[in-house]
View 1 (cartoon, helix red, strand yellow):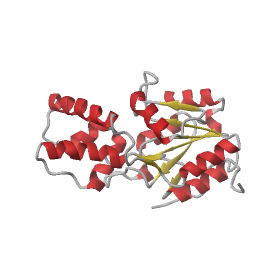
View 2 (spheres, one colour):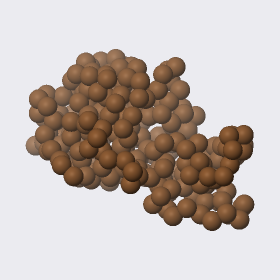
View 3 (cartoon, helix red, strand yellow):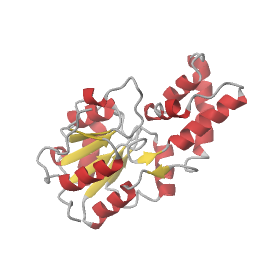
View 4 (tube, helix red, strand yellow):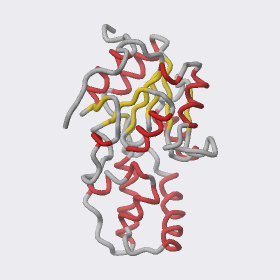
Length: 234
């Protein structure tokens, strides 16, 4: 996979925004566990963890489509209601911020660098999860999937994030692990980073997303973001 270690205008960025699931936070252990419990209750074979993990980025409904391929639309809606009810009560059992990204957020905060979260996850899940992880207190913004009428890949959530953070979109970086993240970031005029360590299935090729940079792991991501905002000597 072709990689670059530079963003355009290296060192000139004023804000960094992150997708949540699979980019900033590893939510797969809890999201997959809920579905596995539902499969067990129905005496249905569980998906291999890595297959289920890579479906998490597409949200609960698409995860359930993977786990219950024979379910029709009506059955999926019933499964979805059960899933969300269970997940709401187990948001942060084994979920963690990807290491060392908590340290990265602390560096941003300490240096007055604006950062935020733009996710398609519903607010009723996003807010309590971030509270339990204790990472949202210093965020310039948290934009959930239902904050606006539009959601990614529409650029509106990212433009709203930049406005709340008081920065120009073109002076911002957006990091995500799905094609819709990069599409949204590009449409908003932001520099974009594809998180190659995220929830990406075998049929998806981040090279085709059009991101400015591909980060193979979180250490590479941390390094390039610190350089992009001029804090590489921190």
